[in-house]
Image 1: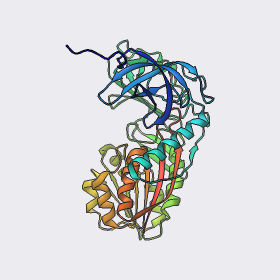
Image 2: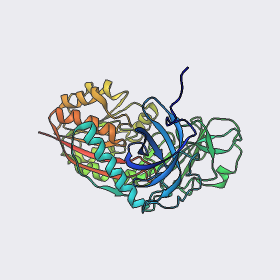
Image 3: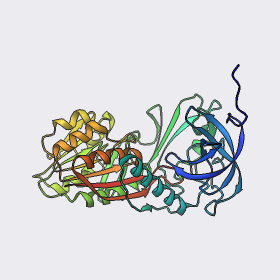
Length: 396
């Protein structure tokens, strides 16, 4: 008969541990009798009572339910749902906002060291609003069995009903939206443009507000479908656009690839920089986004819009002097990196929302003869573990 060792971790058990370093994914590493525990709601250097929430063959997960020795960086979470067993949308509400930047910097450096074998240094910069609240312009809500809006608990299908979200824009936290009984168990998407429009969609179909939103970034206006991808942070488009275009250093006549280009956030200024004698290739797999791009850039003769997967469409492009890519969290991957290297661009600018996939792709780019000569992080997802990076790779 198989027996369980007295000190073996089990779900529901509470153990006292010292909290170690932050790890990628919004948790901190602790150990109990040699067993690794990924802990939420804690901070490095704390001593805490941790309740085990799940166990796998490799590690356990748990929530810090009592802080015995608190970090100087601990604060009272501004959101009442940011508690063990509550909403899983935010990871760091209990961490002072400036300390969150250092945690994210540490994660980026660790990922590059471990996955790319590269020692890097970088800054992670705050973006207004500096308190980390009321920045999110897109929200995807679950609907509970009671017909109330909510968000999923961490690593769970359980829905935490909420009456508002501290990181969402005020226009999203509207009683008209939250007080209604929505009935059914699907999802509700709310998008607010920086020109003041609000759309509410359900199951991908618009149920209120304009069916096209107008996003103004610098001198450009983008008319997009509410469910097309757009940066969630209200100030992300302008922040990323300015730096990316500076790093690309485009020249008149350049042929440019805008990979995973969405509706064309980066495409608009690219077209102006390369002029009529240059060309931009926008490649995007979302049909809805490319339909938006076709409308936004109607009449632009120096633009080719490719609707399809980047690894399938990029080989069709014969020339690329410069490449910009903004892939999903999974990164570009081996096939796309191989195709980029085959084009031999003088510069590759990589906008990334995941430091692990960026590090893996950086290793492949370095092996292909490109050097990482600039990298910076932006805290475009405050209160969560996510972080945006912009990196430039130059040939030789």
